[in-house]
Image (tube, rainbow, N blue to C red; front, top):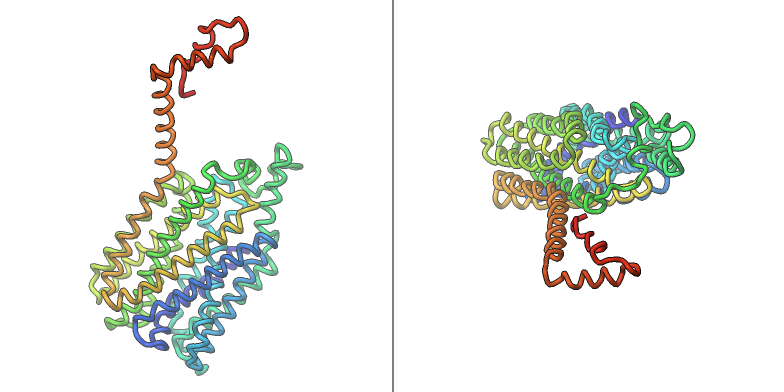
Length: 461
């Protein structure tokens, strides 16, 4: 049911991406404000992620995600009304509310990870993301038909995709509220509690895990959070934030750049469709890579991919749709690597009882960063041009490389430093008399010093 809901919601998810900037340019005037819609609905996604995360913690995934999609439908309807009446005052808050629906679409990936064992978590996340592909890729291609429907109803053509979003989000909210049973997070918490109560996870052992061969939360997750803890949460969050900022900055301005150089809205929709396809279609492969080689290595690969995307977008001729399409495909692939690997890293570090709230905070930070990138993209393009924006964003993506390798270096470095200090203190000749005196003072009566000082064999033990 979660997969079906994501397929339907995918079409609504891409409405704001495809025409949001164009609608703002038409209603607000000038390319400098074209990034405002993306900033608003990513800000709405930030508020939505925080609220949905808390609601999921209290009531479960089902009511949290369903309510988020209901808000998305309300915001989409508000955008249509604002476009029909020419009301900027209504457009801005409506875009903010629409963003809550996009938050639900992204946070649904955590529901897919709730019941997966750590060894299969990457593939579980990728399954939910892949389910979004059909609607997400089809959505931009429906820009022209949806615009014709809107025009027939007396609404501006650019508001047509938001009509589609309103219908898709409404259907998704109803499906999740009625049919998503049992609740994934509640079931994961129950199984974790059974596992903590005794070996085998209570009656029936691992029979109800839902994983092949009885693997599930009762196995590796019964001990609680991963040893890396907060540091892993920070690493996964930073990877997702960096890839989100770079992706949104370039993606938001690409349709504006294309229309400014004589391309049609259909051509811009095609490029965005290729981009969205690259965001989701590689998910099974990405999930498999995360499970096989680790989230850190997949996260590290996202940096060079995003750099290549930015460089190609900057160097592509303005009139070349294939070159811009290739750049946006690389951009989507780099984002996919960063999101799936970051999600797996964060989820692995959290026990089920604290998972939803922390994930909501993570996605709130993700949306805030995306809003900042979107707001900055418009003025940069207006002042320096689209190529400068693309190149700067690509270079910023290289920060993912040191971040993704940070924990491994930190652990090895700290361990080596600690071992070196202990050995240096042990072999220091000035400390030898002190060690002998301490050994004698702690020794039982009549024990020989030799019997005590022979413990110097392994100072690093």
